[in-house]
Amino acid sequence: MSFTIHGLAVSNGIAIGHAHLVSHATLEVEHYVLPGRFVDEEIVRFDEAVAEVQAELDALMAGTDPGAPAELTAFIDLHHMLLADPLLMDATRQLIRERRCNAEWALVQQLEQVVEQFEQIEDEYLRERKADIVQVVERVLKVLLGHPGHPPKHARGEHLIVVAHDLSPADTLQFKQLKIGGFVTDLGAATSHTAIVARSLAIPAVVGLHHARHLIREDDMLIVDGTRGVLIVDPDPRVLEEYRLRRSALELERTKLKRLKKSRAATLDGAEIELAANIELPGDIGQVKAVDAAGIGLFRTEFLFLNRDGMPGEEEQFAAYRSVAEAMSGRPVVIRTLDIGADKNLRGVERTEANPALGQRAIRYCLAEPQLFLTQLRAILRASSHGRIKVLVPMLAHAHEIEQTLALIAQAKEQLRGRGQPFDEGIEVGGMIEIPAAALALGVFLEKLDFLSIGTNDLIQYTLAIDRTDEAVAHLYDPLHPAVLRLIAHTIRAGERAGRPVAVCGEMAGDPRLTRLLLGMGLRQFSMHPAQVLEVKQEVLRSNLAELRRKVSRLLDTDDPAKLRQQLERLNAAN
Ligand code: PEP
Ligand code: MG
Figure (cartoon, rainbow, N blue to C red):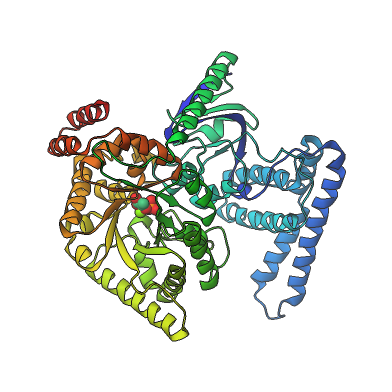
């Protein structure tokens, strides 16, 4: 039966495909249907992996000290038992045989079944054993990873629509390796990092669907309308046809936009506008080049730290930053220092704060971990001798944070001089304006830093007191709130007066409906997902700056949200 669910549109476009239900662990594995002749071999592969984990546990037991705590041996025994549990193991074999799922996929599907049953258990002790099951499954998956199977050609995840209750930014990052048509989640909001990663992958997505994971069955036919925030389950043929046509029309529009790649980003009255790109990983550079962005305006380096057990060391980070600097051949590359915390967490670090977005995030974390920060700063500085790198510091609010950061940069430079390693002595250091306190007390920022970049995602979150990842308050997340607009306009104006460049690198910069508004505030530097650059350029090309400034100044005086929206509509409609 066909039905429709409405959610939040977070990544434009239309995806049509079959549902694949996942929990976060499943994203790390490939999903494919085995050619019939490989089924027996796949079961052997699975059994061998289980035997290998059993041997690992035996070795662990043999190596334990006789005086080791009883919990340790009990834990090994429990894992042994789970490895023999028919509910987990036999059922997995059955899935491989009957549905021809590859072993990894079969195992995680079964894991989800078991975990769901555990969640119903009243006894807290037993309920918590869920973590042990996940650990055992992860051990088997790790072994399977080392002994790959036989995916049929062209079958790797194509046209799959991932359906999940929730996805972390780290989970979503896995989509970069798997080919996914689109995704939908029950939780989530438009500027959560999960949504941001979806946009950077240019895959249609709808979040905040509440019960989608529960209502949708594996393999259901789905249409994801990432522009309107609609999910259609089991569509009738007429609707399917209509969406196929709309998808083709969108593709055509995208092709047309590509013609703008080489045109200068300048307004009708000749003002040059810098349209740079945001990236999460060095691998995103291909997309940046495809639209010929003016530079990298935001490299979210924390993504190098996710989905791994240890931290990347100085050499690894240096190689990553250098590769981006070199690939951009002299165009500016703004590297943001580690913004960990809130919804982006290091593996294995249990966060216990009640309000992680207000906790030890970004620069607060880095200043509390100076060795980790110095390692990153040295890596960035070393890369600066291979291109035009600038450093950007997130979440600053206090003068002493700026001072401590600058002192640590000076210390990192001194360490490199001591080692005789080259770097750009005049490297520019900028600060993100994403806390209202920073926007309202810009003096010290303008005095001590070389440039500013407004992070509107957080600026909105902190101005309006809305957790940007919480769909329950997503309707209150409003980039057009007069307070938000005034903070942005004030920052741009103050930068202009002090002769300090100001960019916007939050999601507002990539929204073509807001391009004219930002231009009218005086903004000259935008940084956004590469996928948005040409659409925003199209807006720049049809805008007259002098006119916009007058109109936007009137709009900023408006307190009435309805009037403000009307004014914005008129601003966008005018020729
Ligand atoms: C922002 O807050 O607007 C920003 C660009 O940083 P992030 O989205 O990574 O927090
Ligand atoms: Mg931010």
